[in-house]
Length: 146
Image (cartoon, rainbow, N blue to C red):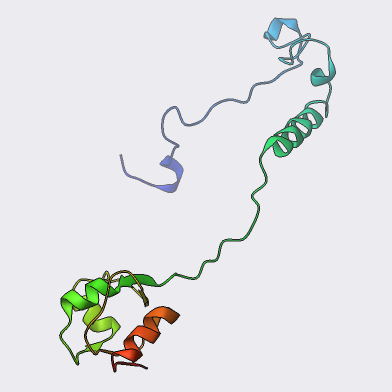
């Protein structure tokens, strides 16, 4: 059979005949017309109000989310003890070298040096944040932060 405009039909079982209610008891959908008993929900427009009330109850019982969470990415923390272990005296510490040495992940956008451990070498820090005690320690060793 050739496929033409007048031969196209929907898939078998995809179409259903509409349920006709309120057409007498012989139809099987008479008397209460599939609406159950006689109360508020059997009337037209009766059921929506109850849904709204239930939703209000749900909203009131949900705990409030207080405060604020920033979407800005926090810098990855790098410890002084790791810099001591991985870098030689006089080397430059920047985001690229931190990624090469595996101290931060390859996806890191920024880093911050935190005072955990001790440092004995003179280092040049470029484009990386540092806490105040770390900055003082690096400058006292003759290092520089740019």
